[in-house]
Image (cartoon, rainbow, N blue to C red; front, side):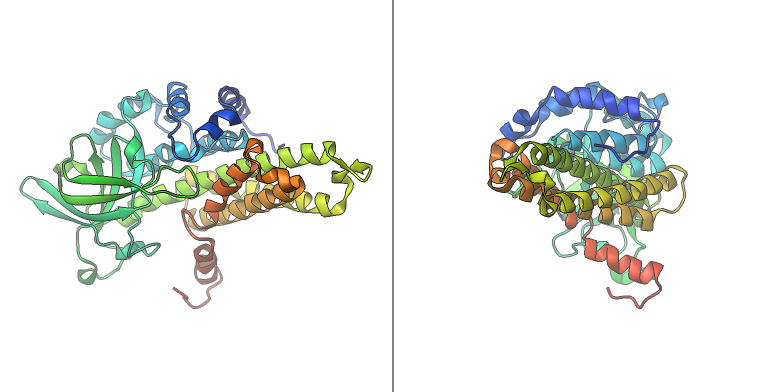
Amino acid sequence: MDFGIADEYEPIRAEVRRLCDRFGTDYWRGLEPDRYPDEFVGELTRGGYLGALIPEQYGGGGLPLAGACVILEEIAASGGNPAACHAQMYVMATLLRHGSDEQKARYLPAIAGGELRLQAFAVTEPAAGSETTRIRTRAERTADGWLINGQKIWTSRALHSDLMIVLARTTPYDEVRNKTDGMSVFLVDLGEAKGVTIRPIATMINHSTTEVFFDDVLVPDDALVGTEGHGFGHILDGMNAERILIASECIGEGRFFLDRAVQYANQREVFGRPIGANQGVQFPLARAYAQLAGADLMRKQAAALFDSGQSCGTQANLAKMMASEASWAAANACLDTHGGFGFAAEYDIERKFRETRLYQVAPINNNLVLAHIGHKVLGLPRSY
């Protein structure tokens, strides 16, 4: 199922789909509840897809974000779970745009070649939640480098990553004039750093998420990414990329649900005719298709703005919200279409249903997107 808009990345889409077809839904179902898809991620890495955003000079694919969107969308549409590997794409934005030449030369070729994995994005904290400026993790300069102390939560794939992007306060909150100042970004080598404790969190989906504790973790001076104190702006590039890529995953999820539902609605006969002839079945699927088509356009606009270096915060938020709501509509319509069979594990709908529900609240809650639109776009009083 497509939305009638051809793009220049169709050959990449076809290649990714061929790779995904080697890992059918039986494979993904067999990973439940919490096994990491090492085999699939390994094939993606060897195919160059997880290094798609890395410039060619460093051994990567040199694709813009719009190209990476196609990769994750197609994984989701095939019935796979792109959350197992998507961070390596969106974390790239912070490193590519703000990392030093030395950092890029040191890490990017190894990431592109699969020798190093950059899958962990440590920003959220238990007490701060979505209020990122209230993070408490501290990084203090010492004679030997930076000493990091604090705690992060929902740092997915940290147990399957060699490197971690960490946002920490280098100036206390009450000592800065602007609350977004005083935060800095660090690239932590988990193979060398001492004092990092990673604990898995059991969840309703196979997301490999964790909480991370930093106890006097010493990192060298050159672990700092970009400019000290300007980390909030640096991390926003990664967050905007994340939201656009997540929107792409949701569009792929929606395609998966609609494909399955339409096929079933055409084949399943009750009272002497296909159930798809009933408007109670047909209209929710048609509405979900319309929502996905609109989300697809917004996703493409957001990616185009990001790739051209323009401001895209509002568009990235809109794309994520619209796509997550569209995929959720498709998920519910698909489950209703299948009736009781939708709850059977062998149909994969209940698994994908759980997976797509996440994106109503992550990586940003849709209510916060509405608050952003109300305040930043419509000029209404700030509500948060």
